Image (cartoon, rainbow, N blue to C red):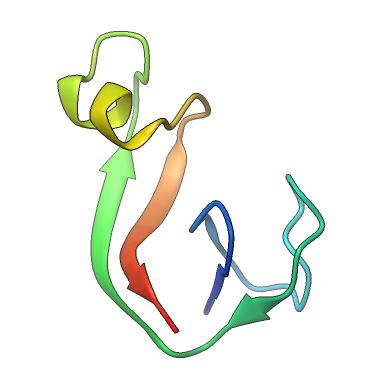
Length: 58
């Protein structure tokens, strides 16, 4: 699995399906957002789409 270097969305692709930036396999911390409108964590991190995200990507 890879994580986007910009929005931190986790996917299996080499480019992010949301923002088309490159992805990296060097990431840590898994965050699953199911309802970004009701999530305080999602609001704090600026996440607007449900999905799996990482906390840190290099």
